[in-house]
Length: 210
Image (tube, rainbow, N blue to C red; front, side):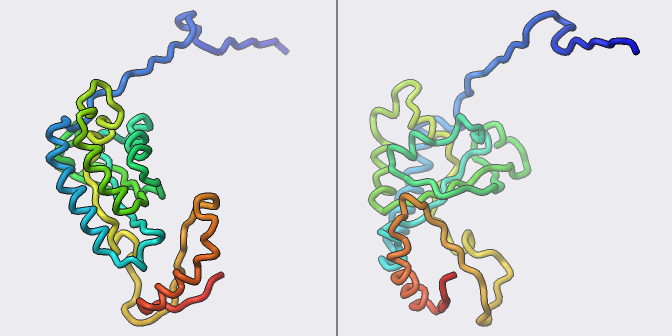
């Protein structure tokens, strides 16, 4: 049998592979325009968080939705600096569709795929994003917090339609309620389940833990 040998690689050029990384382009929004867009959204968010009954806020926290501009879905565009300085805790994410006001996808007629980030924060932490957005440091070149702000499409309070899937009957019926918690950050959750059960009962939900 013939001894066949194969040379695998970049033999057509006899050169090693080159991997080119590109610097991220400019964000979809300019700082001044984004301040005008986000300032009223943050004010509305803080006021809406205050309107939630204290017993419905776990340790004073509410859940907000931070929507990314469709242009800012890369890993490098994740608003890590903003979340860190605003002390917003990431809970999860989901895909969504939006017609952005600016960016490379704004010229398209159809809605574009984007990502909704769910964060937990107190009203004070949400309100603290206002001076963070308006600080003079935001005008510094290559400021990571500025880039994070300018990559956002919208910020709002999480609503019941975001939580509850369609198809639930209006008449009383059994359903599964799943509570998500961090094993380290929420280590005391088991001690506080009674408080949650009492709140659930006060709004007409009776159940048992499994």
